[in-house]
Length: 252
Ligand code: PGA
Image 1 (tube, rainbow, N blue to C red):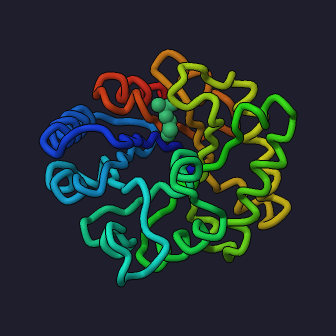
Image 2 (image 1 turned 180 degrees about the vertical axis):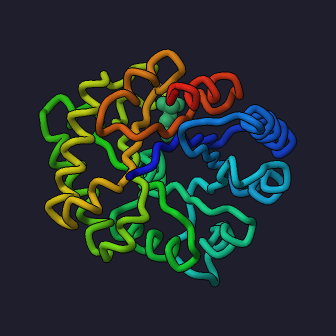
């Protein structure tokens, strides 16, 4: 059966010492505790190597928040999937709405990034989600369908089976405005059905689909109780150990 996963997305927050401190706290909170989900933190590139040194990856997975769409070469300022993998990280967030919105990421570039992630044994946490206007004009199913089809449906069933999806309605990210558990469930069920149609029931049943967007300890339990919500991608609330653990513990 598919895994339940709670993944933190630190975004552009914390200095290296602050990040190491936060990772140390989360690692300590997980040590000796039995939790009912996989726990991952995705941190800035600059933090990966140092954070890897203070966590036990059997209990706390490590990921980057992005990687380049090229293997290597003259791309000043970019960080490749192989560089990420060489830090000891095993996950990478791809297609986050902030990358799409502010850094011009398209399905074409994302396709390259997904392929490079796989070449380097990184598990993609692939984000999809509509903006407010698309929610309001009722095109949100089509938007999410295109995002998935364009960047992921070229994958073999085997590779697709390794992708973690994160549905993040953009209007809910960092706004304090969470999708209701019914809105999340409706979209997650729709996504799972798309996967059934493309790859069959077995792959669909095994794909973890996380919800992201103002997920916090107070609403995580209701969201995670929905049959098609397999965990969360957590921004703001992943920056405080107690809040993040509160969400992890929503799987009891
Ligand atoms: P948020 O961010 O939890 O701060 O809304 C979620 C995300 O963007 O991954």
